[in-house]
Length: 444
Ligand code: UGA
Image 1 (cartoon, protein in one colour):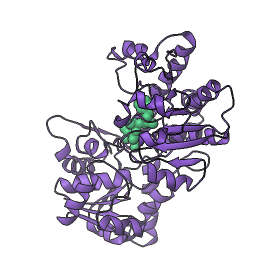
Image 2 (image 1 turned 180 degrees about the vertical axis):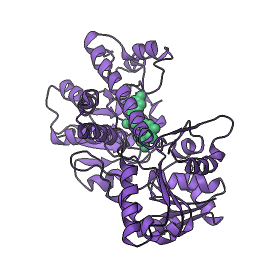
Image 3 (image 1 turned 30 degrees about the vertical axis):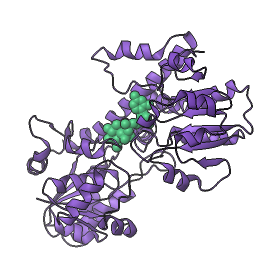
Image 4 (image 1 turned 60 degrees about the horizontal axis):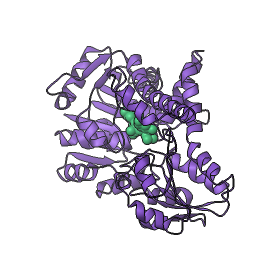
């Protein structure tokens, strides 16, 4: 089978690599010529476990091609995936220009039937818009006789485990009411649908909403737990006990109930805000989502306020070791990362930061450039030297079992602010370190 994928971001590139690995002949199209050239040399634009090998091997085997030529992609296959970005507009709604431009390009060049599959996260009704622009383009170019169908096929992969998620999806949502499209996409996904049925077919709009509902549900779950954590702290309870207590109920489950410094990344914040806008357009006041968004913004400052309180409201000239810059482990992505809110607040208050992250150092330098209030340290130990306190923002494995004695010796103020509840407060207290975490009574 042949497929074309427009967009070599997280979703498009991973999908392309995984499909090529299954034996398909895949063409990737992107407008970014430099990126396409680098990909053709096996250089990854993102850090994602397992991706580099897949891309290199399949490219070498001739199953994965990269081009900036949209026409080449359109003529390559009947199945055309759209996986280009939908950046938020200033008001938070999804910008569809890239998606619609691809639809137009497909219609302008296609020479036979095409199945257009929208993989980007797009507002409900976008597939209809793609259809409309394609019809218009076909009419304008005098090729009304050509047929096509637009299906929705949202992606649920997680950064950091994108390849694994894509290879073993827990569900494959196909939004189409067209039987032929359904049959083709079922065949396409057959390699990923073995052992038990994972394909869920529904109408286009329901598929589009499913993607937002999934992310918003998870964002709500996290935010609810963050609220419980803040409450636990005020009430003298321990959120970690509460988490175990409620997670054991299978209706609630253990996943996505870890309290922390707020969710970040390219998906949850953007999708929550986009769905608020989608609701707004149909005159529905999405109160729960609005509260989730607001509460999450506040949560990103919780650790900063603890720091400020600990130092009596003045941290001018203080130096903070910061462990973790990425919005979560196993990625170098810092989009909407809580580390940014915390660092920026520390700088604003006159403090300096010595940061370490196993993967996101280059990304951090790219975002903030050279500045005297930011030192990027060689390793997690080096970040501690000369610092007043340690602030932990991302739960990288390498931070789970630290040398507390070394921390105690290196820090001027013997205090840890942990935004991810990595340690047992009792253990930390044995080293005579002050330990502030999320939703637990301070132990010292
Ligand atoms: C999320 C979804 O999990 C994917 O299913 C979805 O496909 C993807 O968005 C997308 O729409 O593309 P991702 O943003 O990669 O994936 O990361 P998650 O692992 O979901 O984490 C998101 C944020 O929630 C992180 O900042 C993480 O630290 C935070 N989080 C997660 C918590 O604070 N507590 C938890 O218990 C879980």
